[in-house]
Image (cartoon, rainbow, N blue to C red; front, side, top):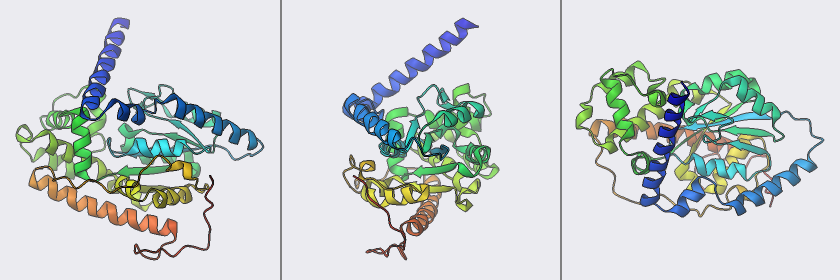
Length: 333
């Protein structure tokens, strides 16, 4: 038994090394260090700021609350998690943290509840992307204190990033699902929560003929569709964040997120972001039926996200300039 566990652990480590090596060749080691928050200077300064803030807030009796950052992999969740981690109100457990996760799956809820209870921050953030289909369950377990953010980005951006890091992984999993083959234990989450309609949609393709890019786009569709299928768009404890808008207008999106969480906005949350729109690269030659579904879903996500952000920031419409609410957001240095 111990030999099997050791072999399984070794295969996972080797798999991660290969992924990161492929990613470093497609981008850069500097990007990899930033993505995984490995810069000791950045982490050290952050720890000092948080320690000072918590020292000054030690008499506050507000119990910590969980925040679940969910969505599809390669949708900008690292950037958002790092930004929130710059705020003193947060303690972050990213998906690689073994206290809260095992093989990127969130641990048993009593364990998560214990980690939340041990926290001295206002929010304890978890990033259970592989368990995004369990978002209603996670929120229900913690009651009215819990919050969730579903992050998404344009399909071509996600496809480019996912194929660079994961290769044809999404396509292989969907092929196995359509063929009713047994999934590897670490891949079962990719088809979890799949609706009957979308399961039939996946099976309607000749998946052997699809490219890795079309497979990654199909995965983008079925996972992001869960946001509506799970009824998360009808909940006041959950919001959408558009990664592309976060890059283009970081302060505006960050203010909306902070208002949703009822915490003060601080410029540190977006200090490392150079505002920019997504590069105008040619779209991938994705299967037309998949492209049609992705386009329609993206429009629905955008409309919902825009309405949520407008309400949070006090805008009457999405036109500029905005009309602020009576409430004021205080920007702290």
